[in-house]
Image (cartoon, rainbow, N blue to C red; front, side):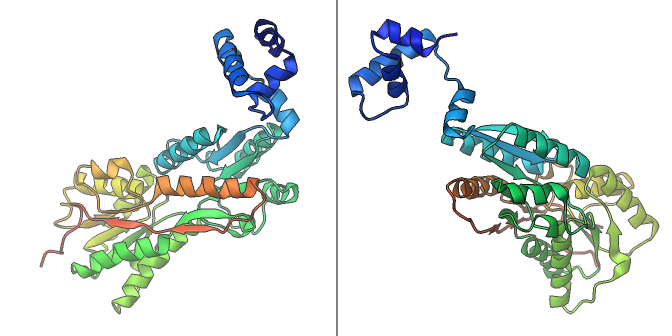
Length: 336
């Protein structure tokens, strides 16, 4: 391993001069800096980031905690975070919770043991008003940015989120404007704030059109393709007599659509279908899916901006970004 001493011997200068040149200190001439940096590169010198971290009390590491990279919603957000981290000279450590509180606790503690400079967390939502690991993060004063909506247990941290109420409202309003009046809703997890917001957006749009929400048109669907398929089977078995289905997310919509199509139901001629999220698959599905585009990359950029403010000692405000309705071939006016 090449050391500062080795560079100093080759350059004919002191170790201190090499150290200052590599740190761009102002009391070293530009010519000397250039010569030493070039020599360090030729010798293959790699700075000891751990030693630098001990000196500067910073590791230039950032943790990212999400449920799983198999969830396509996170792909663009994490990529945007990584791009921003790269430009700012940080490295990222990615950890998965599998959406279980116990694993979330372990992953956050592991990141704390690595002395990361900050942690981005997509929480495992629970109904409890407090969670010990989040209380610990608060006591420590750890820089934390929540990726998603706040719940009671993590409400003391800044966050970035999509305006899910308005996004869902616009999706339902689109169906209403093209003539649908009986719109089924495939709902998400009860404990999830963004699932609650999307359901509220659906209800608000119905009320704007003077339609009272019908509980017989609400089906618990979860978050996955399989769960969407199960909700579709229940929908068919109960003969809900709806002309459109609005789903909690695109995966649920795709799972439900697969079942309906395989049962001979024509989309959108017999049932219009709307998702939420605009994952890549939605555009290339058997019937391209009308959905709500979440600003995933912009959420990642906003999250990093908030993190840098915290690291600088500032208190950033939470950010709420608008979502955009994307109309494709899965929706049309109901048949007479």
